[in-house]
Length: 629
Image (cartoon, rainbow, N blue to C red; front, side):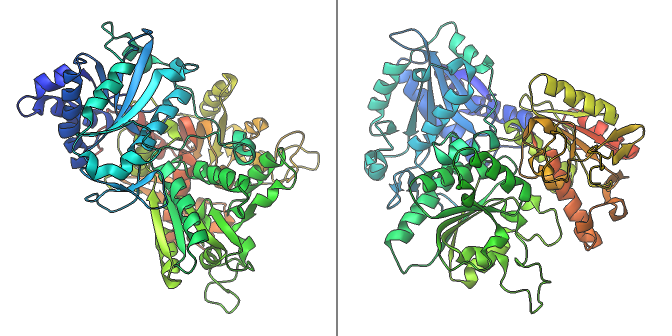
């Protein structure tokens, strides 16, 4: 997906004297694509940076070179500023140059780091990824996920252009190995021209642009399928943008702690929505740190997620399960016994580790405090919209308060990418608005090439659609709200069909920790190929992903009139018994938000309630993406 396919000559000609035409085109395309207005920063970048690049291309004799503006990376919501599409000057093969444009006028590398920089004037003040490190990851991502580039890595190169900066003002950025001769400023733009002319020239037929835009985009690698290789051998995932910022920040913080004793403890807090790459960062850190001999442990509050990691990594090396733990394993940990503690799914933290009521004499230390104290560098990864059970308290505010009580410094990275849901930020926003977790009311679903949404009119139709996807070679799972009993298998090994909707019958995933008759236990339901015929719930789906996602909304959340109504009486979840009406409403919305965002390619939704089903049909199949009245 791109916002504009143009050329330098078109921008320069249409933009004179006030550059209004192409900027208006971009603003219109942005609104049409994302159903919201672009930020003032984006508009300023189009107005200044695109024009600066277009003028440089025209002066280089590349006025007709295709510019793919705001090119969305495959299965990801990040966009490269510009991808230049043409052919190689010597070979005539397709050639592409990814250009990262910055309006910075100055900047410097952060001490003890090679790929983080500090830029005066950027608000809020934060560590930023070096522009060439950023564009390198865009290039790697294109090579890995674009079928047309498979086997042709040389066809893609990248550069960063700081068109407002003099070289003297960014000297440290130019001098680090990260720059690698591909960072250009207003001072050395002649070198940028030579760089471009050596790598690309115009393709009069426009075939190179067509090839890139029409290429099949392969899905990202499944998290659990490469966990063992990721941790024990090499890094399979490409970290981009804020993901790499988070990774580098952890490594820099660890290095500072090891070499500068006596300073305040530093905590790295990484927040992001479903599929934004939190667990990818966690596993990348585990791989890097464990291979280099650091004392590091990965902890979660999820039995299913941790069990799956144990299973995958155990295939690679005996004893490697010691790399994984639960949050409540640190109740008696010695202070700073670990160098790094990676706290994945940190929204699952509890008030305390021993299960005692908060405030009682048995409650002991807060769990968040135990986790902070257990390591020199605690790393929290969380999504506040995934707090789905009473007693879960993993929020930014809780972590920041516990840190302040200990005189610790919190370094916060907010992820800006999304791998799950096909990279469709549109879908994530749609879900948040649908469930009232963001203000503004439900939106009509708009067609998105990255993601498919459909409402089934019966559970039979939902199951048939998912089975068809499974038969085509995709992974697929069905989940449901916890509105039916969850029975143990019968004595003869058969499963109880607890989920009854009309004449349709289904059974939950298996409670037995060893599985039954070749079917996996509930902890492995999401990743074992034999898990398809069972229905998952929030306890077994949270933290996992699969290609196609079927969600049965039960009678615990129904649409009445102009709003959602949460019905605690319809829930069979014992964990919800102590939740107040207001808490139950919040938690059940978060629960369905998690269930609705497990798919990477598409989601099929069915509600047992006719009025709710009518509402879903209206918002999914009945309009063009406008706000609903």
